[in-house]
Image 1 (cartoon, one colour):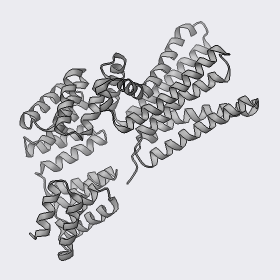
Image 2 (cartoon, rainbow, N blue to C red):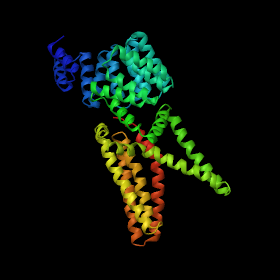
Image 3 (cartoon, helix red, strand yellow):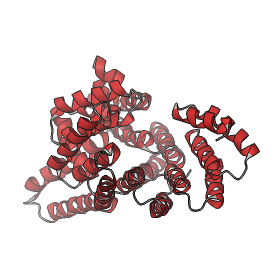
Image 4 (cartoon, rainbow, N blue to C red):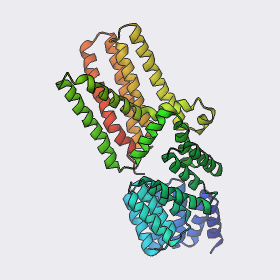
Length: 420
């Protein structure tokens, strides 16, 4: 191996990818047909988020060394980061055909299946990796995650216990144990593991988000919401939409029944109110309880910058809604202040979607939709105060349909992963 190549591998090992890239380019200047150097350069470019060039280098590596499993694995990592999940799965399968006993590759395959909510496939991949290396920490962790999703929490706990016994300083294993304990409502124990994971690796986002959830789970009402969300996350995306759509049609059925049978209305109306409150709670519980965490000195520091910004925006919207509602009570309940209160309260929903969406096009669409709703609201207020009744009525309908559209379409947009 040349000095450039040796320096590059050392620099990659200590996370200095930009410096490693310089050495690899010097290596390729002298040996342009070195497939492994192209693969390593692709990995460096991937870490620096230069996705197009990383893909090109990985494909060059495959052209030079089509029987190199590492080249296929590198390309799989790039497709995964670029959100081409099917291509990533195909590439890692190609790597495994060339290196069927590589536990690292099975670990990566398990992670891809977990992203796609294919829990059984993830479990199979992790267990195949463990058949190659029974002490592989990554495969043990992904096996545990798949078991939790499949409802086999006791087995998951034992799996992570074994992983922690082999690698007690592994941050991901501690975070994984924290989430498993959180599933079982053992909040204080979960907090201990999340704290330990962050002590070992302060950049562990999986542990930081778990810590935030565990802190909020101390509030009884949020504990109910968290249990619901953890249950929903175990479902496939199609099943999740089935629950949401089923709830909406159930609400419509009860509403029509109450209208058609006035004598049943007093018994059915509480169900309608409970459903509406539950829907609003599922949308806004996360940011509202994040606002409560800002009153806690420890919780305040656990929140990410985006979470703090989200609480600022949503807090402002809800404050204006509360002030508008208060003004409606001291003037006329059916005054413009009432509708303004409703509008500002509902604006918290698209604001939450903006911050929960993936960066890029999904977030840009939701920012535009939120800004549009805000401008429509201002236009409506202007028409009301200038007594343009007809135009105000049209804008009311437009705002109503806009809010319904955001409720239904916004979630799908927020969950979509843009291709990079």
